[in-house]
Amino acid sequence: MEIEKYYDIIVEKLIGWSEQIVKLLPNFILAILVLIAFVFVGRIIKKLAQQLFDRTFKNRSLSSIISKVIYIIVISIGAFVALSLLNLDKAVTSLLAGAGIIGLALGFAFQDIATNFIAGFFMAIKRPFKIGQVIHCEGHSGTIRFIGIRTTEITSFQGQEVIIPNKMLFQNPLINDSENIYKRIDLNVGVSYGEDLERVRDIAIEAVKNTPNINKNKDIDLVYLAFGDSSINFRIMIWVEYKSQLEFLKSQSEAIIAIKKAFDKEDIMIPFPIRTLDFGIKGGEKLNEVLPQEKSIS
Image (cartoon, rainbow, N blue to C red):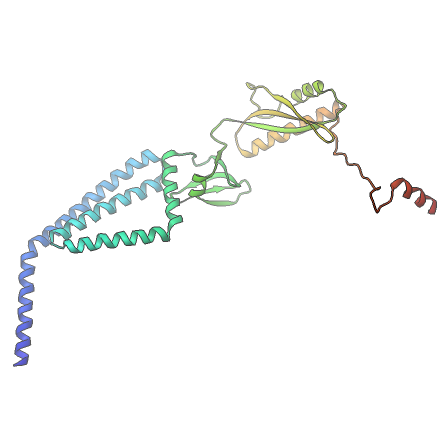
């Protein structure tokens, strides 16, 4: 009797579930069709969004990520609509609450990664630099090789590959040498107090007129800066075409050579720093008193 009782209960439950399945079958089929439709529409939207963002941002990594996020959002909406058709509203609410908690936890856990992604997103919109340009930021200098959504890769002037988080490039001062055609060389030089400063100025300017890549449309400027310890210091400023960092340094080197040659030819002295040594301090001996004694001993 006990076996028949349990058997009847099981059969009753199975019949009840079967009836529920039959009742939900149309909604179940409709939910599947809705989900398939959302997947199909999501793929179309993803493709169109990637093409649009490729033209807008000129950054395939960024456009790919944004289009994938849009695709996931569309699929998620389709899943929630399908669950609603199956009268699983409580499950939908639980999923949304769980997604919110998980998102909050992941936000705290991957805060730096999220910051770099956000920085990469805004940089892709603003586009402060491009691949092939030379940048300087926080002690790192080099030519941009790759711009990603999280990091930017540069090749340093020594040939090293440097990976820089986008947060650093977005939050700190950034110098882009490739944005302007011309760049200025600033050379600080000192001459003796006995020199004619107007003559020095004319000779120095004339010496650098043939600097490689010089911009002949801009004047060469020379200004005296200060009375130094052993020299009168001046700065000569030359504008040259910026082709690369190496070419810029070569132009600077040739300008230094030209000034040195011109000063040597015109007997203009670039003095060494002068130091006066005093041996007569307390507890010591005067130099003029020590030397005669050493000579007499020898």
